[in-house]
Length: 160
Ligand code: 4NP
Image (cartoon, rainbow, N blue to C red; front, side):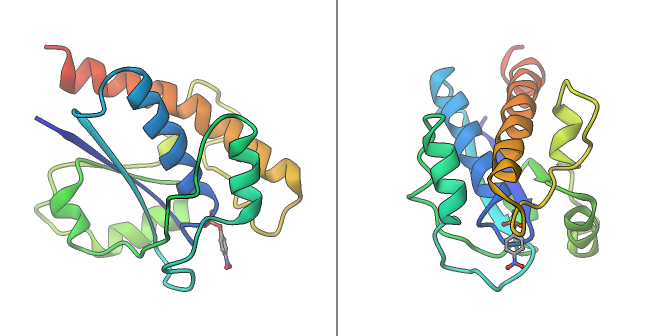
């Protein structure tokens, strides 16, 4: 059975595309590309159809991740029928998702950084109005949580 993971942020041009690209690479490296589907989406519509922010593309490329194939889209109620884990970057994204979550959703909706080992940050800070360091911090936090998320999926959904 396939596990489907959706990362969500406000614009789907900075944080969630980074999580999407990093986690997809981890999944491929683990040989699990046929078992784990990865996608990302925005709570807001303003960047729908856009490529990731050039600053995110650049920062990710310097660590070996290609975000260029991605295009922003907006999350919908139907995503709750498709995805097993819906992982927002911050608490505002989480509350926006809770507002559209169908009552019968049986999957997991929770902050991505709940899978992180570090305990300084519980949310991924929005880097949009920040300097280059903000984009490096996003990558640091996403790489850490991606490792924990992959372990969790392997332990609870793949290894039996
Ligand atoms: P993201 O960052 O939610 O990580 O994609 C943002 C992107 C765009 C805007 C805000 C945050 N914006 O206001 O346009």
